Image 1 (spheres, helix red, strand yellow):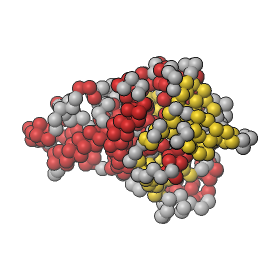
Image 2 (cartoon, rainbow, N blue to C red; image 1 turned 180 degrees about the horizontal axis):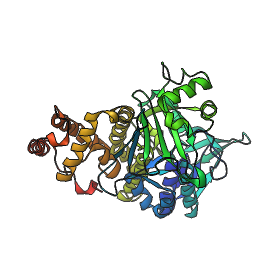
Image 3 (cartoon, rainbow, N blue to C red; image 1 turned 120 degrees about the vertical axis):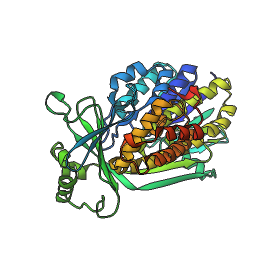
Image 4 (tube, rainbow, N blue to C red; image 1 turned 60 degrees about the horizontal axis):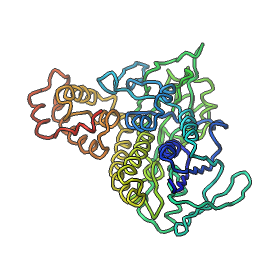
Length: 454
């Protein structure tokens, strides 16, 4: 390929897309303002584990790296709920053996993807190179070397902005007059802690689960790591009686954990010290009406950052890569046609998963404790058994299939209405009128196209 592709951002999405492009024969330059994670460690409290699901897996399979990625994965079969008394309840994600999601280390995965990109022979990474400006008319960018403060220019044929939620590429396009962007901060934030491995690297709590301590307005979650540790994340409001603002000293933190998460307190040495040492991270949603401008394309978090409560940020970004790959095939690498169509194929889906991720926060921290929620989940599994191409729980549509997010969102609303009708005035699965259930499914839900089913 004669065209030179320049990418801003060497994170997960940028690194994966560079493999696709390297395999196609493009010369690819990837610039990132941070040091190379393969040679430097991540600062404490910034490692958020990732949940890999079917959409992301398909993209990794397309570039031929999934067999190597598998060595980094820990399967999670469901949510392990911890109530205030320390009682445990496992809520399976799906009802088939293969319906699991996988915990994976951000650092491990991005390092592997960068190695694979360089192995194509066509991809060059330039770290500690910060984007300063874009000149779309002359197809040139200005960057600054973070070590020397030296500024330099670089010409491109196509510029891809994959530089995350705080995207400098996006902000520069806004300064150039491109409109239709929004950023909405959640009034909750997060803080990371760690449950270390026990003796001989043993896991101190159930290994194959995503652990949740739901407490209504806030929650704690924990995902397993290969070394036997768990990355623990506290999500709670920024302000209020239980909030990041409210805890002023170590005694406040220890008392809070003793009252609300006593089973965790004994597993985290130096809990209060880590709480005040590790940074508090913000949570937000980025939306964009237009992702393309001239020969520039935004994707991944740069155009549609979402909150992490559906485990789909990375998966959605990887699906962007897969979709861009499909359009390059469809239009025989005519980038003008690819860029004009990409936004239309992805924007509604990105907006839908953003909304579902926000809704899932309420579900994770609160709804999962409600007997009616658990009854509806049981009804949904039963309906899926009887009508596998018509009724699939929304979570399963998102995590285990390739149904477009926008379709999953709309079908999910219809299904939620069906479940509300069936669960009304009932306490157990044995009370359900299954003939009525079948009528509702047949009347309200058309079969899903087989191409979208896993």
